[in-house]
Image (cartoon, rainbow, N blue to C red; front, side):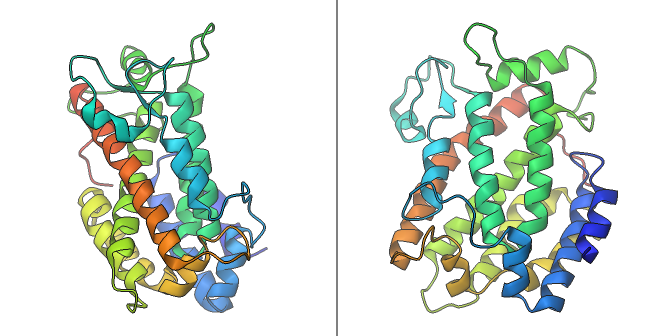
Length: 289
């Protein structure tokens, strides 16, 4: 049993425990360094045998899955790209079932990426499970919007005013799912816009994404762990892009970079609505962890 396997079960009893994430990320980074970097990252991520979906690269099924999460009528899915022209008079919402399916696709991508993504992938999965436990879709349609889920949970009285969320809960799980996706949105956007000759662009992008999306919600311990772990756990640019390839068939770097841009384009309006809904319902927990 590896050091990661010994420690991780002790720290994953709570779906949204960021201290758990910090410790597991730290342990993962040490394991990667000790075992030789990329080889250990492959083992931690499950190797090269992750599902390929018969796509030219791993981003394709993730983009497709997230494209139908935003909806004004859960019976009529639309691509997130279409919402710029959508009437503001009709309430926009997020279909939780589709969102969870999309998060499952993204989880597979995180695992395939390896390195510093390995431990956060386990944490992401735990938060997906936390949301599923609170998800009660309509018996007829099999659907439920994020607003419906959050309002139903809030009516139980488990959360406090000022966005103080009970942990674990569906709202807490959704909050940290969103923050994790926001981190990757900034990460992928930066890598896609970086100089092709910058071999350290994923590391620099990860540090920038952390500073913007996660650091404001972290206390001093987590900040030190992330600042130490991210630069050491991120793969160099060539290896980072290689992990996005679904098969050994040729796939140009520009195709992969465009896939990142496409995913960020789907994420941005989704994240905007996701955050707006949390603020409106007084569920945007501002506390540092």
